[in-house]
Every structure is written in structure tokens, then in C-alpha cells.
Amino acid sequence: MLLRLTKVAKFYGNRLVIKDVSFEVSPGTVTLLAGPNGAGKSTLLKLMAGLSRPSVGSVERGIADEALGYLGHQTFIYPELTAFENLAFWARLHGLAQERCSEEALLAALERMELKRFAFERAGGFSRGMAQRLNLARVLLLSPSLLLLDEPGTGLDTRSMAILHREIAAARDRGAGIVWISHSVAEDLARADRVLAIADKRVVYSGPAADYVPEAVAC
Amino acid sequence: MLSAALAIASKDLRLLLSRGTGLVQALLLGLLLIFVFSLSQRVGEVMGPQGAAAIFWLASAFCQVLIFNTLFAIEEANGARFGLLLAPVPVQAVWLGKGIAGFTLLLCAQAVFLPAAIVFLGQTVSPLWHVGLATVLLADVGIVALGALLGALSQGQAARESLLSIVLFPLLVPVLLAGIRVGAAAFADDIPEGVESWLGLVAAFDALFLGAGIVLFPFVYGGEE
Image (cartoon, rainbow over all chains, first blue to last red; front, side, top):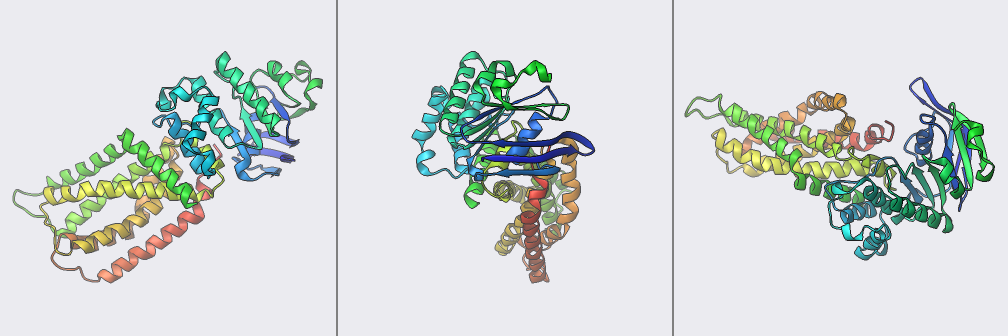
């Protein structure tokens, strides 16, 4: 077990955002988090990441803090730094071993995202797709066992989407558990093993992706 | 934790020094204060050492509000705050990193304010300048410890930014008073009376603000929107 949520509910003030969520993430699986806008998917992902505390219930993680990768709506990029400096900062902050944050390792991570030739350019000049690829490079540099993705494909072009899908598959193949909020559920369903669908502040489907019918649960 | 704090501090210094905006604004505000106060003097009139020290510390206090607002605003533009919170280090590393960066920037600003105070306020550097320098360093520790804690409250939200200066200045009064009293030694020929007591007061408030930063920072800097 990488992550377990038990009877989780979250309030913001008096407003209930999500309730009664129980869910587990296993290694080597991709779980698609589906639901309409405002259903509480991003809140749920933040609860999983530990960025927010549940009002009720518990979130248990079976991994160390350094084994968590989180890719949110925002890119975590410092626009005045170069792509290389951005990666070097996050690698240093996470205390990666020397061989994983050497210049060669960082350039290799950028090469994998097809950003090597932009390595020493200011990240502030990057397009949305390039910024998101840099963000993905940051996350994958940490080799996370648990990868939490909040609509990572938003604003990406076809090439960037292909890179994203390739890296998600690679992470799953090396045993990472992935929870993925997708803005195009129908397209990404084939890449998922499980689906957790949320509507009206509660879980309306939790099970194999093969059995999930989006229309049936109004997502 | 120290390694992470140094990583944050060096990143912040690189960003602020390359961009310059936050630091330049802070410097200009401080210099403007010193210049405006210098206009209150008649031609040939020389301000007393304590008055000059008071203006120097006033400039420093306003300057550090802008410095910490800028330091914490850096993390808000693209949500980097969440990245810092997800790093496998105690969240106090952020407080320490911002504090180190703020301390460096404040010292840089004071290195500009001091000659400005000498020139515009008609002061001379006394043989006791080392007492003044020691006071500046000691008082700066308390100022940045509190600034880094309360700066987190602002987190780039305009309504909260005003909170920094409203809460900060009353809490800083003892440190600033001691800074003015003992710091005047840098411009005077005599060591002020009761210098040990004033320095003891600054050291006590430094310890208090450092302790408050370590204990309270996780409660003011979080991932909740």
C-alpha cells in the first residue's frame, strides 16, 4: 500500500467539499480521478499529498516524504531562473544524492523532456507546454514511488502530451503508483487501471477502469 | 535542514539580485526617508547621534518589510510554495532560508543607509563604530527572525500584506529602541549609558523571536488556500 484514505471528509469553513472517501493506491497502478468541475478532485489530491489536512478521517502514506511526486495546476517554476537552475534548486532542496543532481543527471532529465537545448534559457520565456515539461522533469527527477498528477495535460500540445503519456507509462512500469486527474477522461481511460469517480461531494464509482462508464455516473 | 535553508536562501538572493525590483524599491524607500529627514535640518545644523540612529533604524525597519514581502511573493507566482512544502525537510527550513536571505539583503541595504545617514544627516564615524556595528548585527537577527515569520502571513495576498507592517512594528519596538540607543555609538564619541542592559535586551528579544519562528512558522505557512 502506498496510500490509504479512510472515511476522509474536508470542510473549508462551513462548506463541505468532499465526504466519506475511502481509497487505496497500490504500486504499479494508474488511478484516474474523474468528476465534474468543482467536485473536489484537486482538494482530494492535496489531501493525498499532505498539502491539506482532512477535517474528518485519515490519510496514511506507506512511503517516505521524499518518495512523493506532485504535479499540480501550477508549474512551481521560478521564471527568472534557467531551466537548469530550476531543476538544480529542486534537486538540492530534496537532498538528492550527488550522482542524481550532477550536471549530467540534470541535463539528462531535460533531454528526456526534449528541453536540453533550452537548458540555459530563462524559464519565464517558456510556453505552457515547455513549462509543464520542465515541471514533469522536476517530478521525475525525484523518482517518486507515488505520483500525484492534477490535470497535467492542460494546455499541452500533441508532442508534449505524447511525452507526458510516455513518462506516466514508464513510472507505472517501474512500480510507481499514480493518481491522475485528467481533463479528458474518455481518452485517458485506456491508460488507467482503476477509476475513482466523484460527484456531488462523494465517491460515485471506485473500481476497475474497464468497468467504468462515464455517462452512467454523470462525470 | 541547514542545506535546504541555504538552497532557498541562495535561490532567493539570485532571484532578487538578478531581478532587482524588490531590493531597489526597499533601498529607495530607506534613502528617501533619510533624505526627507535631512531636509528638516537648518543649514549648518547637525543632528544628534541618537536622532541619526533613529532615522537609520526607521529606514531599516521599513526596508525589511518590503524585503520580506518580496521574498515570500517569489513563491506565489507559480505555486512554488507547494513545492517547498512537499520537500522532505522541516517547514522551518523555509523560515530559516528566508531569514538568511533577508538578513543578507538587510545588511546590504544598511551598507547603503549608513553612508547616506553620515552624508545627509551630518554625522561622523566615531572611534566606537564597532559597538554600533555589533548592535546592528544583533538587532538585525531579531528583526529578520520576526520578519521571516510574519512575512509568511502575507503570502502575496494584498489584504494580508498590510498585516505584516501592522503586527511587525509594535513587536519590534524593544529591538529598535535598543538599536537606536546603542547604535548611536557609531556616531558619538562616548559609549551610551547602560549599553550592557540594552544589548542584553536585544539578545533576549532575538532569542524570543528565534524561538517563536521555529515553533510558530509551521502554523502560518501551509498548503491551505
